[in-house]
Amino acid sequence: MSYRQEYQKSLSNPEAFWREQARALTWHRAPKIILEKDQSGIDRWFVDGEMNSCYLALDVHIEQGYGDQIALYYDSPVTGTKQSFTYNQLRDEVAHCAGALISLGVSQGDRVIIYMPMIPQAAIAMLACARIGAIHSVVFGGFSATELAIRIDDAQPKVILTASCGLEIDKVIAYKPMLDQAILLATHKPTHCLVYQRSIAPAELVPDRDIDWQGALKNATPADCVAVKATDPLYILYTSGTTGKPKGVVRDNGGHAVAMHYSMRAVYNMQRGDVFWAASDVGWVVGHSYIVYAPLIAGVTTVLYEGKPVRTPDAGAFWRVIEEYQVRAIFAAPTAFRAIKKADPESTLLNPYNISSLKTVFMAGERLDPPTYHWIKNLLGLPVIDHWWQTETGWAICANLMGIEVMPVKAGSATLPVPGFDVQILDVSGQQVGAQEQGSVAIKLPLPPGCLSTIWGDVERFKQSYLSVFPGYYVSGDGGYKDEDGYVYVMGRTDDVINVAGHRLSTGEMEEIIAAHNAVAECAVVGIECDLKGQQPVGLVILKDGQTISSIQLEAELVATVREKIGAVACLKTVKVVRQLPKTRSGKILRKLIRQIADGENYLLPSTIDDPASVKYIIEAFQR
Ligand code: COA
Ligand code: AMP
Image (cartoon, rainbow, N blue to C red):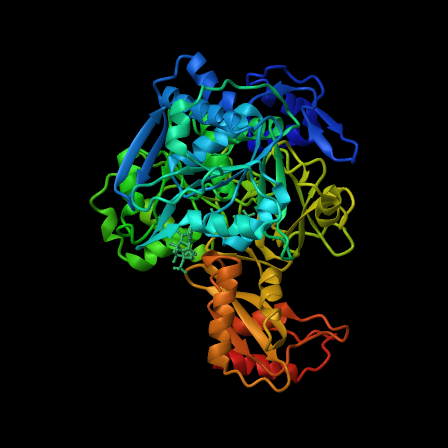
């Protein structure tokens, strides 16, 4: 079937299309009702279906005779460890971990926070929760104790799973003290913490509360999969919104499994036994979907890599992993390839490796800028596929569907809407705009299976943030346009969210932290262009009258506070003191104008600007 036929089929009769996709999975109870609105008016998929996501990821393959196939390769250049797990071995580990969770009092519907580095135990923990119907919430290791505490209070986990430490380039990050601090800060207290001790930096355990992972799993009775409703939550994943309160994106079990399975074939063209490598982190949605669930549900071997594209030990790391595990498709953020290009511009570190197993390079997390696209395309001579998606959708909204029909690539475009996603470009009044015209990228409802079903504990926030801007549509928060062939170009956020090294961060949250400083009267944080990380945050502050703090001292204090409150991943390194911020007459800070000035772009002074003279302070600040 051609792309156009497949796409039309998915939109003209979504229920028939997704019923057919759902048949490819083994259900405890096959769904008869494919799409129905819930009490809040939200579209829900496969509402009377029952299944188990862990069963689909592991047990079903064993029952079908693939128990000895490799499910997961773990490669850790930072510790010098390599390990492989067959489906049998991974199922056994997961069943023991699930048994340990049960012995700690976790039952169906309970939340479990997972705060772990990129080790197999993180994936094992996720699958163990799914096995017993508990809802996991993985918190990225680069987040601070404060951020972790916010998530603990929101998700109210019964148990938290962690490891004693993680390893970054040249440094050991002790996770356990951060967890202890977070529990101290949080109002909600978990009953237990299960701690995986790594020999490089074992942690001290808090008596009665903390349990040693290795001991607990050894003594645990392996637990079997329980049947859950397709609409039951599988996980909560917090993502940055425009305020300091992150949004707990809720993903259900049934729709997610169907979407994951479909995408592995349709988008990535992966078959059972192929090796797929998503070079991300389990703390991000890419890690949830394409390190853990999708490859395993599709019977594909996944690679879990505890390292970086560069400096662990060098810029040849990606090529080594591809050769060593015969990776067929890699999925990474453009930042990773920009880092490789910067460290090894002549690509000499590719020479020692035979990467002929590699058939496709997939990119997401941020826009694949044309120079990076051309560099990687010329280097490898393979299809390089940009695809656009978000934590909220859980899988690609636009892509070049390698398993359906390969369309010509246009540099700078994420190609065409994926079946199930009716992508439209709307103007401020919600009307569709013509080709080449910029607008809000929106998706006509219903969203396909796999997308968020709500914001944890706050369905009104879900509706208000995503569904009320343009009635009948999901608003993505991204701006962009389509060309005459319907190719979608996603150009960047229309809200206060920025993308730093493929990491989604809220400038609003940084502003809240900066504004709380004694010396600061007012501030703005904008994401400005960065050759390596795509964007980097820069703070602009106005001092309160009478403040004498030096700008160097203030910058150092604000950088340290943002790092402490959000985490190292925030990457705020620059804060500039200015006399005035450009604002509209109604007092709204003109952040886009500031960003355009910082990036050296042409700009038009908005007619609503209060004091055009304010612009000169911004120009001066970025010349300093
Ligand atoms: N746990 C603890 N700290 C972490 C962390 C984690 N899991 N991940 C990152 N950090 C820390 C880093 O050590 C760094 O700390 P520092 O300021 O003390 O040096 C800080 O957070 C910023 O990290 P990062 O933005 O990753 O910068 P980097 O200089 O360490 O690495 C790249 C730069 C380009 C190599 C790296 O960003 C990268 O590999 N990017 C790929 C992006 C990606 O996979 N995105 C996922 C979405 S698909
Ligand atoms: P996250 O939710 O962390 O995955 O971040 C999602 C955001 O990253 C999107 O809303 C976009 O702004 C950006 N993004 C991700 N992939 C792409 C892409 N291929 N092209 C353009 N922007 C992207």
